[in-house]
Image: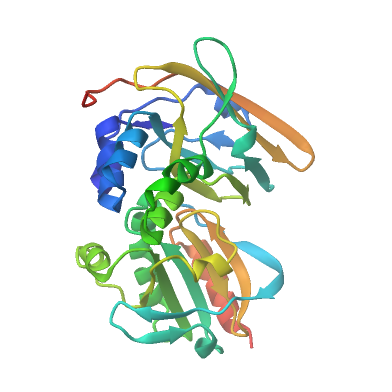
Length: 183
Length: 146
């Protein structure tokens, strides 16, 4: 289905947008970003209590003491697909650290999800969780996919990112490492 | 903005499980993949309710939002999972973007493929309201089943 998005008719930018402080982007594949916005004050993260695609129960509260990246996504969401592999690279870059990544899929079944993950160069080394009707996401401040939160070791939202990211970009790695150094 | 041609819109929504009637209704509108990103150093926010499109007759019109579509689909009793996919594939109705934040989603206009129109998009940064215009947007016609 991603190919459907890629084979679209192109409608090119008008310079008007470039004059503005914020710009509409016309490229079919906008660049992935590498910013993380601090959440101030850090707020307690809502609970996540979901099953993984393997059927294992996972809770966010059970991961206290670890830095946790919570990523809300779906396979039909182009930027979600594009950023997914970078979460795996981030996990591998910090393999010996108390870091967990939870990829919370919205509304899709295991077959659809595995159709996507099995086509990746490297299968995900982190849990992919099922949120079949969006109940879990509804408890989080999410208005668009993908949205990602970085949870500190005390279970508080430390950073937020809306839109696709390159998670193993040095700038993002640095912020995650900084959180990992916190008590 | 990049047009999603009727067949592509049809294929995307059918694959999400939307019923045939709703798929057709959606695909008979002008649908665009829309991206908005904050490239500045301060937060911005927008609300789709403040955006307008201006068709040939010059009368500004509000855009269709996910709420409009879900209200239209409501009598057809879609499953929660189908509504979830439809809703989240649409461009968010409201967002606050910090630097680097962005979204990609569908915007729809109450016009048939083959139309041309301008899009007036608005956002706020602090107390200052900004506006931009995309002129002469072309929604290319494609074969639509009778």
